[in-house]
Image 1 (cartoon, helix red, strand yellow):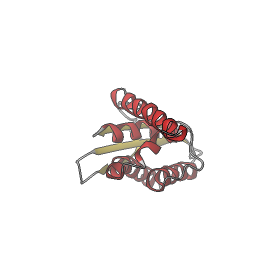
Image 2 (cartoon, one colour):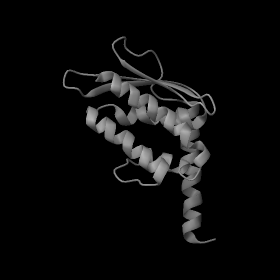
Image 3 (cartoon, rainbow, N blue to C red):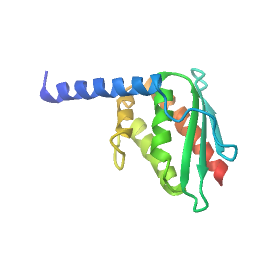
Image 4 (cartoon, rainbow, N blue to C red):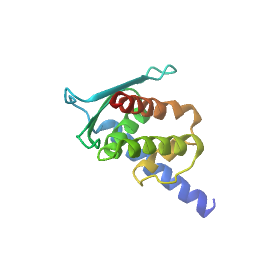
Length: 148
């Protein structure tokens, strides 16, 4: 094996463990505030469902996010990562972050992606699992639309 292959396998193992940790201990669960904006999406292929909530302050900054995911480890981990990544962002930054994650997963581009979100690069090669990430991204996008 080459050094590059060994490095790739090590990164994949690390990413896999972190994704499983986020599945076992998801972030951003609990009851959202009554005024939170809501987005919901379902993966028609496997049945994963995600409800994503976000709240803004008067300046339009996302102050808090919640998620409720009934689905696989990848969908749950993605929703957890979104809760962390989107809080504190402006609406435009929120939108750009979702677009960058889509580019990472679907196209393999990691420009402008935080190290934590790069965990999702492990899904790029697993084309059959792209929709597991996509359902969380769709729900988060719909929550943003609900703001507008």
